[in-house]
Image (cartoon, rainbow, N blue to C red; front, side, top):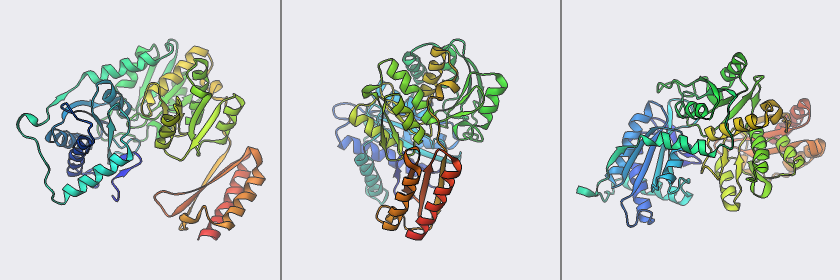
Length: 452
């Protein structure tokens, strides 16, 4: 797997890359590293452990729980709950560590391990690096210092986690959802129980699809990565809107009453205006990545709001929000972070607040999302090139300059080297799709010429 920790924990094919031995070893290493860092000083440490419904999550959960308990950590097993629920409960219960077993929107054979620090925040990079180093050290034979007797961790199920998370979500709602009909696509994932419960208790009439997880069907033709079924169901049932989650429900995409997609940029725009109206949008600023549609930036400017852009990845959005105290940020993919109420993206919370805006204003989601016009966007992957020279090639810089001059203020060019493959991604936005395609084609040729 190369380096174990990526931008969102450790992921791989379960029982091939991500084995029970690896899960157990990483859990023991995490306990030792956090103990060395002083996190557990003066008390018996406690960890919250949750998972999504994947079949592999059953044996991986057992391995993680065994590893933590063997290292002297008491474990609260919360069962199948969304990633943001595990993060919330880690903070709410004063736990020293949270562990979520999920591969998010990935296909069922994959799984992953994500660690949360005290408070429900993502572990710092240096701690992840230390955990990986300690794991490797002991994997090759160095013995662990193991507690015995009363020093071992105790394990119990914490069934109250579901209810506490639901109550938290309901407490955040600015208004009820009475009169709304909402279709919920749960991706046969971790929100299949939570999301219908909270929307119903908030007053909405709901129709659910993708809400029968069997351990094998997560993300299979449904959820935020496959919106076709949700679009059809919204139209069929005459619903006001549809909400789609991914497997661990840290994302939310939406569908309006006509069956058209409302993406993460549009959701951010709608929520930004709602939060400003309630006095919750600190510094009148939204944080998003450089992949956000130019139409999003132009819409915020028209509304007198500021946009701060980061590198691609929700971790960079969150870092920027934490550093400057911003309240709202996210990605086009639907990973939306509302920092006053969550330490990570929360798809159920995002969907609730979006529905609340529809209910409060009496406007359709289509009308609300119309605050921004998505400019046509063309993405071309150029393989087998030297991605390391994207920022230093004079030939490429000239080609980009010419493209930007042609597009003017209503277009945008972004060249980005892939983080995992020998290719460069060329993204072009323009007011006209044909112009975007033409410019992207010319830039792709320039990349091949300059970096091939």
